[in-house]
Length: 190
Image (cartoon, rainbow, N blue to C red):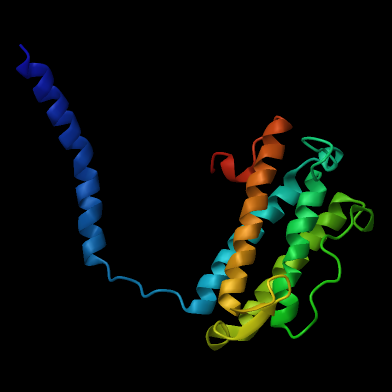
């Protein structure tokens, strides 16, 4: 009697494994793609986090843009302005310009949702243009981080800003949840 359920479970598991095995066989027959070039890898990561933050900026209700989890924290809009503004600590030195004078763009300079969205988009577009302008050879060029007073490779500095934006993406997910909303990346794909 105990053998029948075991046999049924084994047959069921084997049935589920067949499609996976067929997929593995197809992967072995497909030639392996070469890796992306250094600048393309940086650009892909830069554009991916930019896409996520832009989607949030465009999606979040404007009447909740000044929502703060606590009075001491940044508002939703201020989080976006901070992340986008920090991008210029990468973009400006890469393009031979001085870094921004102030740490964060002020909310009163970006009064509407459309203003914030435009700034977020521009900061990522400017960073992408800087990465493309440097190309593969330029990813190893050195720039000085104004805060650390240390030289960094352009690719390393870019990845630092990508990670920084990822941290703020995570914080903004919390704002969505506090507002009873689902972030764009967490919604079912159609």
